[in-house]
Length: 182
Image (cartoon, rainbow, N blue to C red; front, side, top):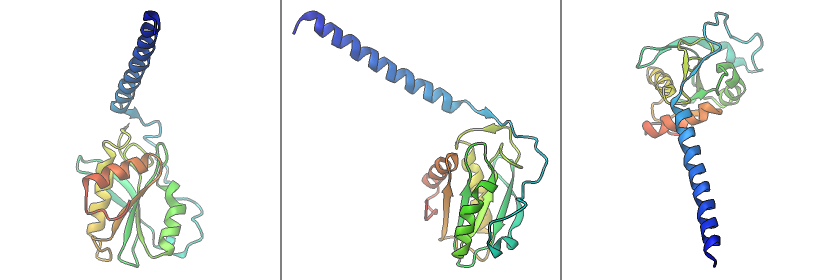
């Protein structure tokens, strides 16, 4: 192989490697940056005018959760009928009402559900969205709430998320081995 061929291959490889490193650094920087919540300060209640066709939604209670760092979260709770419960986690720039169709399916099968608004979303406090980094504290607040409920077996708690909620569910389950389903 001619010397200039080797030099060209080396140059192309170096460019690809540098581009990959640059993309990794940019992704890391983006992950460290928090995003301001454009929906914060919203005062209207978000309870939907029409809930999915499920009688147990009549049992849905508005609850407040407080995270370990003092953030107040708005949440809904529907009690368990089978000793199991699931923490439902919405996606980026959504709110707990996005999880109502999934909640309807779960409660038809007897599961209890906690549906918090993540910090910086919906009716919860907070101005920053951290794509799971701080939101794991929100999940922990929901978990701690479920531990206070006599109708929930602490060995039968799971998490289920959508989009950013899925990432947060995975991060939280990695920290809490007591979570039985993700």
